[in-house]
Image (cartoon, rainbow, N blue to C red):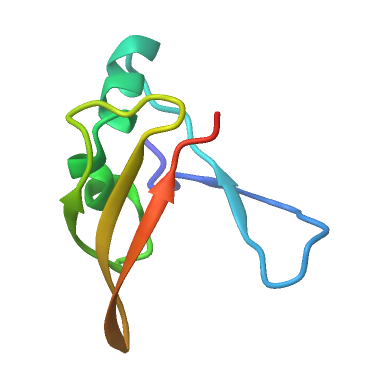
Length: 83
């Protein structure tokens, strides 16, 4: 079994990275995880999310949710679901 988890993709944008990973799970199960703002730190990958600080139990188009972040110094960010 390979230990490679993601395929790194070429992008045409500066300072941008992209990857593709195949998850062996039903789409509704994956979407339920993605729609939970409190779960974002578990799959973000950057290590910058410290915790979810606000938002609905389940995201929807137009929903806002906040995160406590840290890149050298702590800060907070508010996100809006657009699609």
